[in-house]
Length: 234
Ligand SMILES: NC(=O)c1ccc[n+]([C@@H]2O[C@H](COP(=O)([O-])OP(=O)(O)OC[C@H]3O[C@@H](n4cnc5c(N)ncnc54)[C@H](OP(=O)(O)O)[C@@H]3O)[C@@H](O)[C@H]2O)c1
Image (cartoon, rainbow, N blue to C red; front, side, top):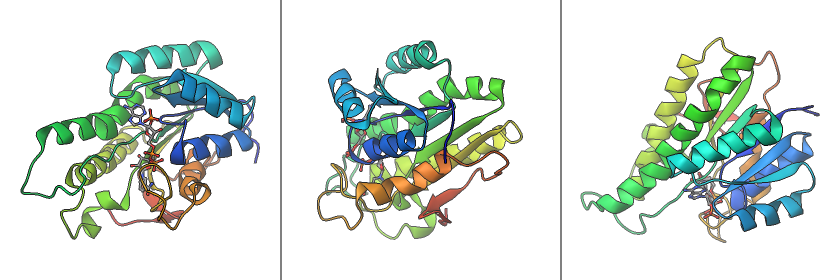
């Protein structure tokens, strides 16, 4: 499928699942802004992807960086049609509640929840203005309340539960605007975060996020949580 003049911005796009999302979106015909904290890493990723990819320095944990990156993205491409909030950290190690590491909780929420929210605040008004937008929040089945059966990775899981809630709220607020907002679980995927033993490769991990990022005109799918292109319980 060819997506014409559309531009996508992928946070954390220089490695792991994010890099593969960038590659698949570029292969699908989108112009892709590869957001990364390191400009050099973003540039290297763009060289690997090809001429449809442009590097963008972007730290989602910094409001200043988000504002500067979105302004630069506008200057480079004229606007952002697709936002993939992929950047994420998992810092809990073996910690489990009731033990609380406040610094880990703060840092995790600041990236995984507030980072995505900052990006939405900066990008969504432009989407509403043109009556088209796709927002994909890359979440995890670990954030699903329905599937929450242990205290493993508490800060990470709570950050993804909250990201799922943001997905629902944003979708409700944007109903009828042409902006579709969904959450995608890539599944346990080989990457820096997933490690080498994960059963899924980056191509499989990127599939559901890319599907939601390129929902065709007329598709009303919004406010959903999906894994392997199928609904996942909240
Ligand atoms: N792998 C899995 O099994 C799995 C399963 C479920 C969900 N997920 C989700 O999938 C997404 C991608 O994860 P991954 O597996 O590809 O992990 P990864 O290999 O560890 O990559 C994480 C990405 O997030 C970026 N990032 C972290 N903090 C950032 C910040 N403040 N600003 C901008 N970018 C930041 C990293 O950039 P740097 O290079 O600058 O560090 C990197 O590009 C995450 O949201 C993760 O929670 C992964």
